Amino acid sequence: MPIDRVILGKRGSAYALWVSKQNINVNTALPGHFLLDTNSTIHQVLASGDTFMTRNTGAGATYTQNIPLQAELASYSRLLVWANRYLIRYDSGFGYAGEWGDTDTSSHGVLITNGVLTLKLYAPDALGGPATWLDFWIRWVVFRERY
Amino acid sequence: MIDRAVLGDLDGTGTYVLRVSKEGFNVRTEPLGSRNISFDSRLLEMGTVIQSGLWVFGSGLITFPTMAYAPIVSIQQCDGAGQLLPLPRGRFDQINAHHTFSPIVGIVTLNTLEIRQYAIPWYDTGSVFGYGGTIWQYTIYGMGT
Image: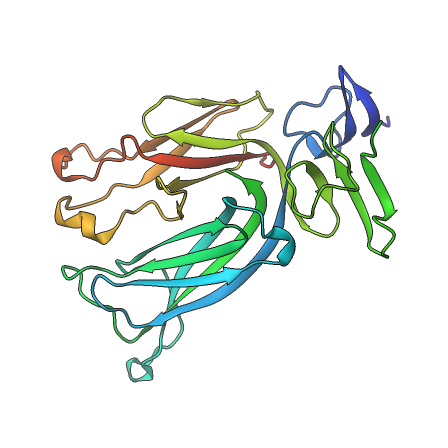
């Protein structure tokens, strides 16, 4: 038996466009049951990239890259960013030059200020020692959501 | 009345879109990337957001509208300047004073999110870095099974 899956107009006391997920009645759908609810934010990607940060690190050093986003975003700060730091071993003498996981003792941070994405790589301090034979990269995705 | 949906030329410049704004906002005048736009076909879609915000570690459960399943959730630490620290492991310089970091976990039910530090009961807790008072950004998605 067919079920209603789309409402363009009024549902309860609110107006919007709702599209429910497969096999769910849009009239009785709960939060999380919608493919589209135009009174909610939809998580959409504004920009993404893969940025080289440094080859090797000095003890206690901070490496920064500032990346301007598209001009339309110049007024935006604190957009949500997901970022992942990864390492590539460039010394082929070890017999392995593939991508490494997050196994080092550095860390990283990300922040958007007035449309510019700032990536920071924090190297280990003297206790941890510098990291050598490694290229450091950060993959990042900027979403429309703000915090 | 204001325009809330466009299927076609957005602004007479040949920019063809399906675009829908939230209640009270003009779909034609909101800039690209505005949080007042609920859908824009120029962007890639990742699912609806049920709730998002900032939360102070140790301040209790985060509650959200009851869902039919435990949703997918993302959490990441945020410092006082707004910088996101995607991997909640702490800075290495803090290890001078704290010998180890225990993982941060998010425990999700149909309507709550609990963010807490994984307990290591057999370890000297005094030397485990504590996250009390730190700020966390969280997002609850309309996705899950």
